[in-house]
Image 1 (cartoon, rainbow, N blue to C red):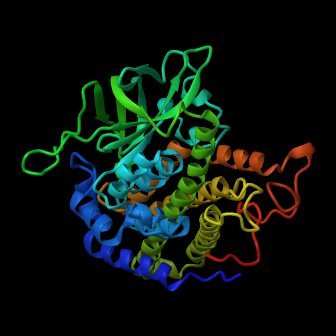
Image 2 (image 1 turned 30 degrees about the vertical axis):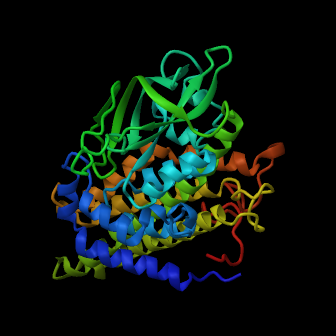
Image 3 (image 1 turned 45 degrees about the vertical axis):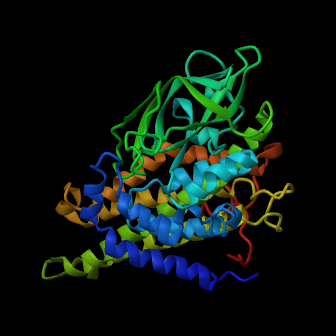
Length: 445
């Protein structure tokens, strides 16, 4: 197998990096997060229209680029390097894969092309802040995470013209601006409760001048942007009061299919988020290395001190290991039946969650060291180091904690079956770090 990237993959990385260097500086990012959408809409239209970013992993038949999770991960690595506020993860890694997997032909044809070109944005709405569990990253997504049919969560009931949803959800990524909501809700009452996915089209109709209304409201839907630790990762609280919705898919809905689709989406989302965390950590380390070369203490650059060099070398090793794990997870997610895939053709069990755990831990460590090595200026609001630190803390709050990601990965991989720990994996003898569950000698990405 060939572990090198293709020329097309290199081109995706180069083009996106050049564009973001020109258009997305730290000051521009800070200004963008303070706008009502929470991101630069003009830049997003350019990324979506010119580069097809949200459609990278969508088939060409639905207006996508026709690539896969590896290309999406490479794009996320570059957006993470710029700490770019955007609806990319919510649209391309959460909403679009679920519509592609479960949607009817009409739903796919009506929504995916618009999502691929950035005309519409989407997100996944999960009640109770249980996004990681719903995606089977920190626990089995058996439906209990959605409320179990009890009070709370989101309930769905049939109506003459479709379905009605009632409930609330917090910590919804890009939930205050997304025009396509994929909502996880319970239906069937308490005794026969089951979790299904529903579509809510929150975009207002086009006005007479052809422009889309920015209010994006429908009766009964209240969306409030929440104050988040990481401003670049906008989140919202949604209240649904008997709002109209349609079932995602055909027929009466299949809970087993929904569970499987959410788990598969979790694999892609974890790989994309791991790559994004690696990009952010790389930017933090690069900026720190440049700073210690210039900052002088006792008449010499602080980077010339061996203690500082050792700390930076350790960070570099951590970063490269996390990058390798993220690439492997992305490639495994798109392997479709290769020797690293599971018996059903899915990605290798646990690889994505383990890669995400390692990437989040690496970003947290690199960001903390960046703050320390920048000295007094690293603690200020004006410096970029705070962006890296908040991204690390915010992502772990959203999709962690790290120890639960690792525990779930071990459970999926069967590492503790029969009470035995496999040598070289986990915390046992021969353990060389939290890399992928099974690392081949070469990976064709």
